[in-house]
Length: 147
Image (cartoon, rainbow, N blue to C red; front, side):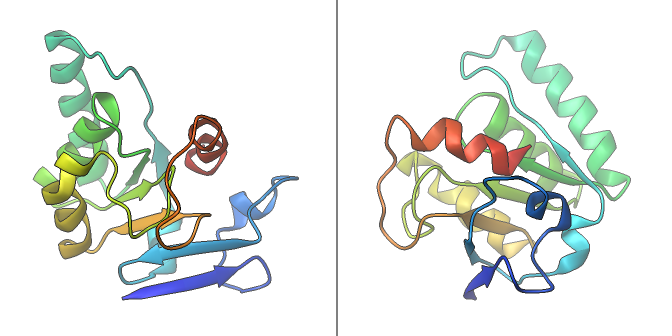
């Protein structure tokens, strides 16, 4: 299911609302469940992950996600994608915050991960609607939502 949550909506994430530059709207795909936002952990890191980094990310994120914490990350390759996959592997929930519109799968080769997040009760989230393409400035701007 696609939807829009405005800053005035009671379902808008409380911690995000506290930001001075919080997005006025959040576009999403998936079933919006406020419980997803009760206990979250932002996971960010390098796109050029080492074998050791991958193993540690999978282990730590898996343990945290199985405990009921929603994993929030930026959907890029490397640590972000590994964190989303680790959460899904243990039956946990994850939110992918996109640097583009929610109808754009970026990077495109992660289409299976995008769909798996949605199929397992997670969310695809963005402050950009539809087919907005990522830009150099939309990545760092997205990170405030991840955090």
